[in-house]
Length: 47
Image (cartoon, rainbow, N blue to C red; front, side, top):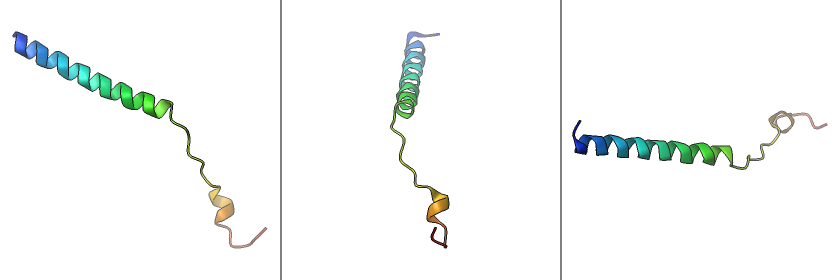
């Protein structure tokens, strides 16, 4: 394996791992969105 191909493989693996880790931690530590109760809001008859 030549030096150029090793550098290309290493840089590609590093970039893919960094992007994967970024989005993984972004999803892991994001705040959940408050979701409305769909059952009570879709009722036609008021309670």
